[in-house]
Every structure is written in C-alpha cells, then in structure tokens.
Image (cartoon, rainbow, N blue to C red; front, side, top):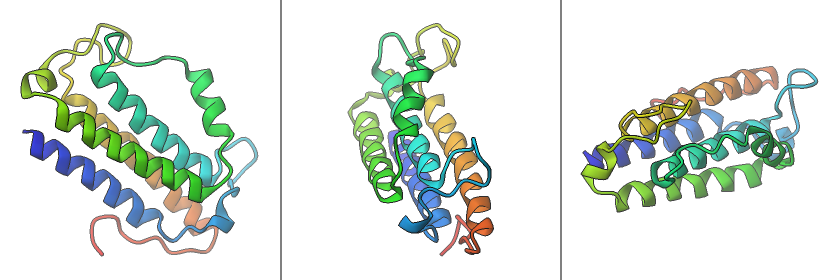
Length: 156
C-alpha cells in the first residue's frame, strides 16, 4: 500500500512538471486577468497545498485552516523558479512523511473537522493528486494564452 502511495506522489510531480515545463521564468508574473493568480502563484499554491495535505497526515488537529495566512505566502511568490523549488521540496516532504508512516497510521482517521474529518488518512494522497491536477490544468490554459504548447501530462 505504501509503495502505491509513494508512486502516486511521484506521478503527481511528474504530471505537474511535464504539463507546465513549457513555462519559463519570464512567464512568472503572467495572469490572464487582474485578480487571478499568476503563473508563479499557481505553482506556489500547488506546492503549499501539497505541504498542507502532508501536514494534515501528522497534525493532531488535522488541516490548518488559516487560509488568509496561506494566501499571503502564495501572493508573495513572484518567481516561477522559486515556486518550482518549493514544489519539489513539498514533494520530497510528502514522500518522507508517507514513508515514515505505518500502514495502520495511513489507515487511521483524520481528526474531526470541516476538511475530510474522520476519513482515513489515505484519502489525503488522492485529494493531493486531484487538487494538483486542477492547478496544472489552469497552468496549461495559461501556457496556451502565452503561446506555448504544453505537453500531455501522461506521456513524454
């Protein structure tokens, strides 16, 4: 089971990077419209959410609901290169956390609360994958608006 979860985290990283690789540092501050996240912020938010999901696996309180604080951190990100480093670091932390958990811990319930309260912790990895897919999809739209052609995420 654990090996499957680690493979899923590897796939999250591979699919995200493959479909957004066409974006460059020069694209960092592009947003389709005022008030929307920039390219760098989309990647930073994806990284932050991987951390958010990962932290919920070991935090006795579950998910950190300080969304205003989370947004301030993402909003400050103006470099795609820095956001990509953050994303890579978040992936490593997710794999490290899952690797350190026993199967019983992975199947134990999340704390009660408004986000997946009481669900087995294993569902966090699927949610991480789903959320990241949402943002890589947005980034492919951004890419096309910039005149880039993103790769299909599932094959080289």
